[in-house]
Length: 381
Image (cartoon, rainbow, N blue to C red):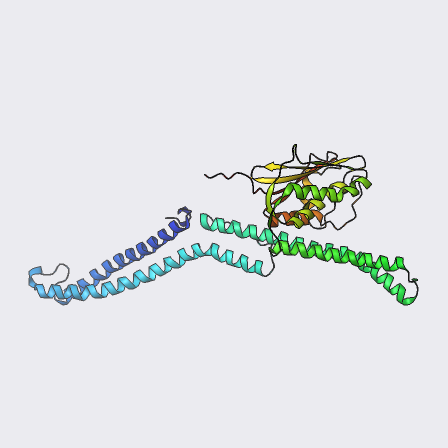
């Protein structure tokens, strides 16, 4: 039986490997035992003077024949067992090597990944279970490589974002020390603004880190998402009026409550970030609509703008840290590029999510906040 023709299920192959080892030992014992028994028995018979072609069999007593059989059987069994063990060991080593080879490759791959080499690829064996494990290890390596790449990119982006305020603060401070810069309220205000920018960035990064770790403090309470959304919109309405962008709040006619269990302050922060993002990408005379409703078992708030739109390939990238897409005028927006990332993290920390949709550049975009609807009917299978 060719080993490569065995079934691909690992437990079947292991069972058949044991059968092969036992069968090989049994065959070896049978063959060796037969040969040795015949050889020793004939030697004992010749010792009684009855060799091949000599005399009559009845010249040898029954006791002598039994003694000859006993004398030949014991060494034959011992030699046969030894041959069986040796044969079984050789076959077991061969079979075990074939079975354990993929496992050794998996161990080596995981050892290299632990050392930081995420480019290693494990050959996919024919066994179904080991093939699944190999695919999982390969996916893990790809995920770790992506995570490491993002970590390196994040460090570079954080360094870049911190460099500007630190440079301004250092330059102004050294100028004051050297007497090059005249102390004034404007200079101190500039230093204070840059320090505040640093503080906000540190706070945002801390919030994201805690959200990723699942340690973000969320104060859950029963509340009405419609009331939270309306309050967030009214809070930002002066900014929309200043930018000459219409803010439409559609709470239904008549307005319907959306009972949810969430953190009012965190939800307000999410909606403020979504509204601020929409404002930044909507030109003057444009419109941003805030609409509440239900989506199956989820309460939702849509923020719809008539702005620059989002290409399909960027619908997920916009939620990455420090990613900033151009505004309605084609310029890269000023800011930290953390607003949408924070919005999604805060929503997910409350069992919800934030997703984006757009028909493409120039067609506007829709951002949907979803939170489990406490008032939705329950369905049981």
